[in-house]
Length: 110
Length: 116
Image 1 (cartoon, rainbow over the protein chains, first blue to last red):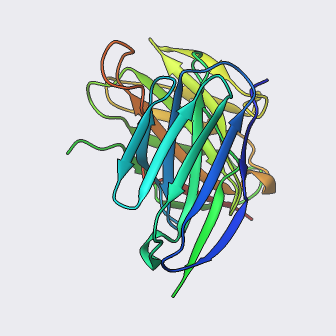
Image 2: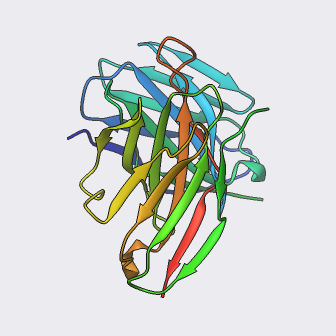
């Protein structure tokens, strides 16, 4: 059974600081997705990573994928309060189900 | 921009009652999904649906649950004899065929189910 784990589960950081969220998964996959969820809201797609070495950037967020290590990272640069949310990675193992990670709840303090 | 729509946004029901949650996927999408999220917890896969049949289902998706695509636009999740632990947010998602797009799932706004 595919397992997808994220760490940290909770992250409280000061504005202006950098940090990285890690997503590890247990089986082979070339496709990984990052989503953002605000409290009480739906899941918003952030990044689509479709091959080993893929790197995507949008604003202060950058995501990368290492399929050999079964690891994806979401790097936050110079955090701002608006980035406060829960971030999920999701893995597509090539079947008809996408498995979500445990989620990382990010709080950026002013 | 096309979007996945879900109704109702919130439903309160008594334990033991049946509920139907409705979803209208994006019109040219072929794969449909239901996920569940208990408050503050992870997003759990329930079932996927393609070509008018279930493609995969999780252990959570037992005989209490069923899905249907009754017409060309709606995709429903039926929960029979609801239990307290069925209280959660239920998300519908869809995506186009594998040869089109990136495999990204597009989510609806969710239906919050409260079982009393």
